[in-house]
Length: 341
Image 1: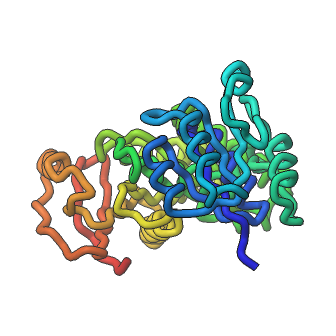
Image 2: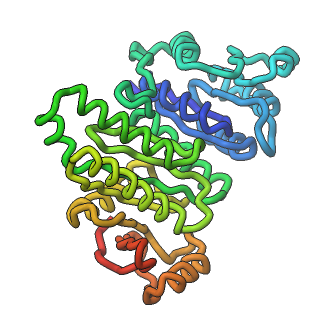
Image 3: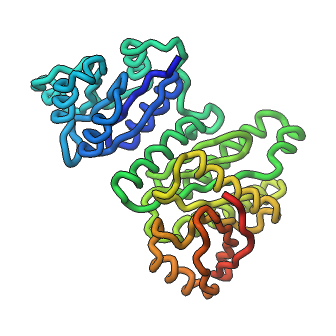
């Protein structure tokens, strides 16, 4: 049996990530659309079971999209949930939605709403928060990544970056110390990460002491590099003060519209993390896919290479990623390895 299909038409990243998180748990296939013109194009190509629709969209409004859906006999069975922070807009709609959801939205409201529209029998009340650290969990983080990738492809704004960092010997610490000490170490790690990053950056714990970070609106390649080195320095100091082995591994990937999926982004981030781990966590490792193709600002990258004092790199074939070694103290990029995609 095919899973029900939900089209999320909204440009609010927190709302989109929450919707995606809940709908994934409910067994839906989901797709994210961030502005009205793209929504109309997609609605002419597909027949969603449910549309989650923000009324205040850029380019073409949600009111116009709702009218389009109600005027298309092909979409007669599509349920429409209007999402708005303005009750008067919902009350004055000419075309009637199936349900109206007023912002702010919480996970309980959304879970109940989805089951009313298209019951799947799946549980949807799993929190997006990691209980041990108060950070987001992997499910919510991947939803936020999916939003970021859709934003790049549809609106072509700034790049975003993903960092994976872990405490290399956390497993041994769990065995040697009591559970309360291990939990305290995770909580302190989360606290240090939060104090290092901006409020708009997204932090999640994946498993063990591995944390994922999404840094949005990256205007220049050196931003995630500076952040990664700052994280490593602060975590190493904390571990040394606690008398623990201070190996902190960090892998970085800069994300662009050439990525096909979130899985591909995480695959590259894990490749960089593995390289950092293999060299004892001495430095961050940077993984760049299709480094000099049109997905990147080549002038910006050339400037960065020139400032770093590294040799110019010749273009490589598509799907030939490059891993670069980041040495912040020397301000230098060194080509260290090449990996298959």
